[in-house]
Length: 626
Image (cartoon, rainbow, N blue to C red; front, top):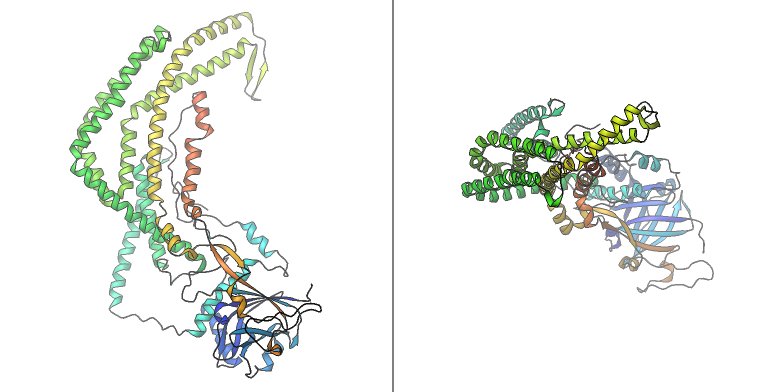
């Protein structure tokens, strides 16, 4: 069965209830037979309603999710009670599309859809939506809400929507007008009193402004100091504590900006600003949770600071000095039955034992300050939270294992140089050489002396290679152990800094705060609110409503009723920060670059900090992006 026209009317849920008086329907005509009904205005003529709509457009200036301004609202129909008078003729005859509807008892019927006063035959698809009056943070969205404030919108998506032909209206564009319907309803039916400010509040606000200006000045000075470069490296990257302080200051400054923008209240936001509201309070919850855990752990550290410092000194001496000496002494013999070169083995063992002795003499005075370090970490929990204590622990681990990093660098350089030399001599042994200009292996004719010397050196280095390999594996395993421990601390820091506690509570308490799309329910209770057609196309049976309505009062058009519902985002979407952190973790700790460095003898550089900033325009390393 085909129809000449299909009219898609978005109908508010409130108008499905019985009405007390007739009135004009106001909303938007989007073209292509799409009408969005916002509300019904009674006890007013068309001139008064038009003036009120103009005032709404000037005061509110509604816009869509992409920031594009919406078209002004207009009178698009008339809803009357059965047996009451008709509307004014002039606005009906001048409208491109006009809805002529009436109520019969508890149901709604459509007489006609008029175009410039002429009835247009066709089919009506009613989409009932919930205005959520009093809850401006509930809104409809065609795609899931983007909670990541740092994500850059794709320009191709915006251009693809604007390049569509006029007969195909994007769903999100239609939903923008549906979302604006609640603002129009509130403007017409609610008298919002103007906020007054007493003179007693002005000194308080001026004091807050002065304090905010002073805090902003000191924060900017600190950020400039942390962004200074020393030997090509930023100051904050030398220490996990510095990076944590930098993150705290930046978040505090951004939270102040959000406070000024009134992102802390639901009444001051609507629609796409839900992400800013959730981000603000999630940051507050994370800071509160961090401080609580820091106070608990700090209290334990302060009370048991002496016992903790003694235990830490014993652990450091055991795992970074004694065990390392025992391993090197074990390598001087025949480790696991492997016979090493005595001369090279003795040289390397004496070298590393001397370095361990030198480190012991240098680091011994600092062991007396271990009690103070534990106490400082305890008191830091009351100010910076548990994350600051983890950052102090990470820096302490890096400082106390600095000598193992030196040993790793020495062993890695020796292994890499010998590996490169063996590769070059092997090419010489095969009668080939490396072409530096073209970066390839070419054939080369060597004389007898060159081949003889190259063969002797290749043989000597081949017999010395197992000894170098054993020492390299020894120190690279310790380096990997330190990296894994630091990675564990980074994971704990990330769990604290990016815990989606408020996101989860808000998703459970108010799921529609985070829309993930829309769905349409065909079998819905609102279908009974609309009277079925009195007659259809020839050959179709007449359907009778459950509520006995006279046949002459039924619809003259076929009506299909849909109920549009908002779908909340899945719980997995709330952990987007952890997903970004996992991408960084896998790229830093589980990458092919680390495996390649282990095989070729390249130095494994300190990995980057696992961090996902929630500040727009700020990259992970703290620099301002473009």
